[in-house]
Length: 287
Image 1: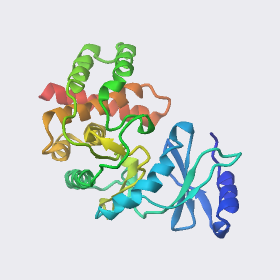
Image 2: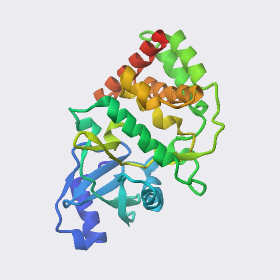
Image 3: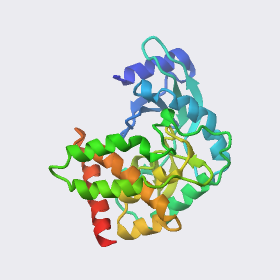
Image 4: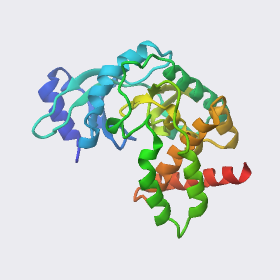
């Protein structure tokens, strides 16, 4: 769906006229699931880009205030909910704008300290009572669920890439990654721990944004960044204390996403996929 500045201006004018004079402009690096626009200097408008992501706004509005009460670092904070219209058919939201650079914009970072800080941040999220939270499922593309849900898709991707990637080796890695089932209690899962959703201030971890695919269940998916961003030493710090089966499942999440985007039309997605596959294969040869 084509979501433009003019569309956002119309939504604000009709539903929140008290803000109609505020400057509205696209965020420099918006996401895939949602499009984000500045609303003045202190707020942001967040609009699902399609029907598959329409449930995210209501979920964030319901649960993010609860999570923030229990966290000592800032996360996305909803201000109000917008209603669907005949020209924009999905629920949308207005959120406070959190100052900071995303990890995508960071060019000076102590990666090992950052790995420790991010690991600590995830543990704090996982420590919050999630007994009434939304279980992972279709609404969040099965984050927190058994990775086997993507077995067929992954096997097909390996077959399609067998002309340029070591299919046999990748198949063995994948089979190991999906060989265990999470047996511990469910915890909160962010679902999309990636550079674009991590904020920094003064070159240090500051907060998390974009909880659209949050849920509860197995947190393995939140550790996939070990192979999509970190190097060998910082990866070790990020994963320190996790059980081997958790690490394998986390690697599986990274491997699945990399395989299905290895020939993506988006050059950034394609580059990220190539990096991830290279890191996974290199690590396997060193173990």
